[in-house]
Length: 225
Image (tube, rainbow, N blue to C red; front, side, top):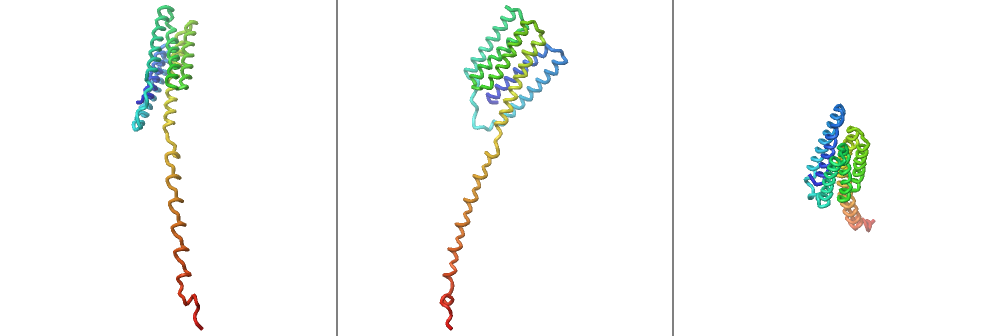
């Protein structure tokens, strides 16, 4: 896999984990189908990414890595913020239900950094959506909402957003990889019939058959009476 495909796989893994973990707060009649759907979506993504990786093995060279210094700094800041927030929420605020919202908020904010580092403006939309879900989860936890409601808003919805975002990039990549027939088979340029068969130049009939010069002299002067 290329680095781009690896980053998509990481996003899909996070989306799967969000759904699997937070579906436990829901009744089994709802949580189990959600988990099965998430697993099926992840397996479909994994298969599509593997096929795309095999199809690109014959390329001109490896793609540049996106896991550079900027990426490592963003991820390091994300980990530090997540761990520090968990300590504050659990030990100081004694609000364990707010952990889900905090983690989602941190993940959403870290996508803003990745959008800048990777120069992908489209990632800002995912970052904004996930950050909004995390902030809503924090507000719900502060208002005393149930764990199930917080799990849906700050856990399952962000997981679905991640899986959906990866699906959209995979589909867009598959569409961009297709080559139009008009570009791959320029028939008009490869078969210039008018230039390869100059019939008028190869058969100058008037020059090759001078009939007036080949007649006998008697016919030209006339017969004596």
